[in-house]
Amino acid sequence: MPSTPHTFLLLQTRTGIPKVTNKCGCCKSKLDFGREFVCCSDCSDPTIMDKNSKLGYCKSGADLTMQLKPQETFHWVAGPWMMCSSPCDGGIRYRDVACYGSLDDKTIKHYPVDDASCSADEMPARQEACNQQSCIDPEMIQSMNPKRSGMSGWLVALVVILGLGAIGGIAFTSYTYYRRRTSGSSGFVYVMMEAYS
Image (cartoon, rainbow, N blue to C red; front, side, top):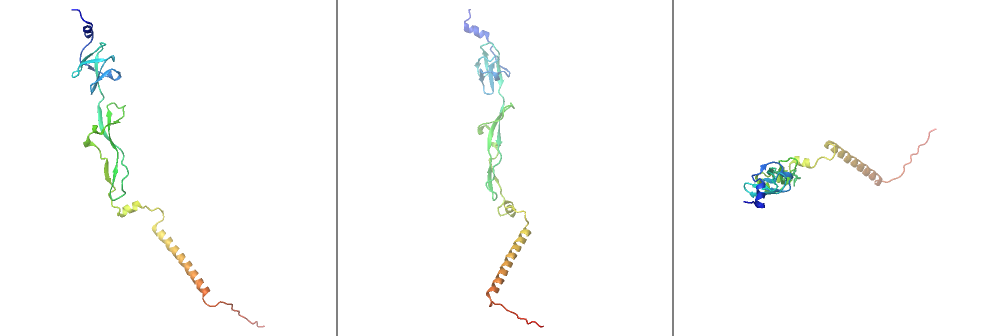
C-alpha cells in the first residue's frame, strides 16, 4: 500500500520517552513541564503526544531529551535591628524580614519572592521588646547622663567654695570701706611739735 507523505514523515521520526541530558538550557524551542524542560537534541521543535509520560518525537529526527530544572529552595532573610523606641521602661524595635529563593546553581544569587513561598512557622520575629530596665535605676541615669567634664567631684566642690569665699571677702571689704566713709565727721588733724634747741 503506498504511503502518504504524512505517514512517511512519522516513519522517519524516532518516537520515545526523552532521555535526561543537560542540553535544553541553551535551546529556545523547549517545553516547560514544571520541574523539567523537554527539547530536541538539535534544538528543533519537540512534539509531545502524551503529557504524563512525555512520549513524543522531534520532527527533525533528532533525539528527544529532558533536562531537570535547578532545584529552587526558599528561606527567610532577616535584616539588622533598628533602634529601640525608648531608652528605658520598655520599648519596641523592628527589623525587615523577607522571603528569598535560591537555586542549586551557586552562580545565581538569591532573589526576593512572595512571603507565601517560605514557611510561616520558620519566620523570624519582625519586632521584639527592648530596654526593659527602669528609667529610675541609678545606673540607667548615670549611663544616660555621662559626665561631660574630666574634673572629679571634689575638685568642682573646692572651686565652688573658693569662689564663694572670694565673693564674700570682696563684699565684706566693700561694706567696711563704705561704713568708714559714711560714719563720723571728717577733717584734718594737725600736730604741732615745737623744736627744742
